[in-house]
Length: 376
Image (cartoon, rainbow, N blue to C red):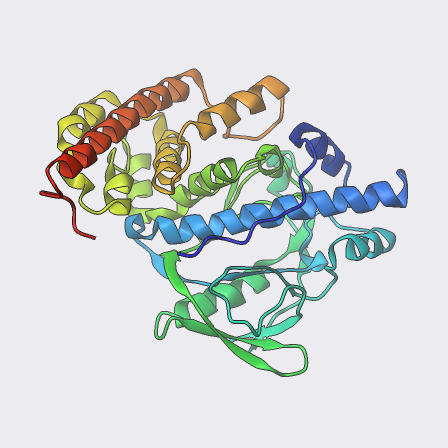
């Protein structure tokens, strides 16, 4: 997969950004317009960077998912999808700062996207289905979660996109209709089905939710606190775990004590051809040693391995959890309990052993003139 396009402008310090976005777009005007533009721009950049990470995680973790679909190499965004509503003046400032408005526009493109697609272009339909304008709904259950009972209803938008993903299974493509009628066929890539979301403009920024069985929403506070690519990928992988294996989730819920849903080394074996030959020495011991704190503990371990398989540091999730706890940032299940933390620390030790075994096998293969070297 080609390297992603990255955001060039540095983001605000995470804790400050959490506090600023918590103020909500409806309070624009209490600060200067220039200040509001900057916080909108920074929040928007944070959100797009997270959604980019979520798409790349979906592609990378696809071999582990029971349910897969084709995943699009673009991100669409609209101010109408902002769950914490913006006033008319705030929407004007938001558009000035980001180029986004009430229409669905392209906010990010992977390198694999066609040249006909450009950032900022308006998309009016996907696979001939018009993109709906999000409405609003009343969620009485939000009272028990500590959130607002009135929120944006974006289910219709995601229904269109998820349907296009399913249809793309036939020929690995979907068709976008741009403003003006031009149609562009866009190649897709197989990944984990469902969508992991997080937004800087969340009406329930402290809450984790699994929505309609096809989406998991991470706390906006946690997403804003993630300030590196590895941390964003870790969060995206954490959310993906809840969508990756419905059978595994049901089995875990019925068990009092379970091991990791995904065997130690499975992600690494998937990502590195031939690596299975060097795992056997440590994998069995690691499996016996790791017990998870229910479903959420399994997500910790899964996310660690996905990040490592993507070339990152698997310890970023532990450090992010510690930072959330240290700074008192409310983020639902993301901060780890002592039991979950001890399991992660043990797993990280085992992953280090796996990496060391891999390096030794590579050195041995090089010293033997390539004998036994894994085939590409």
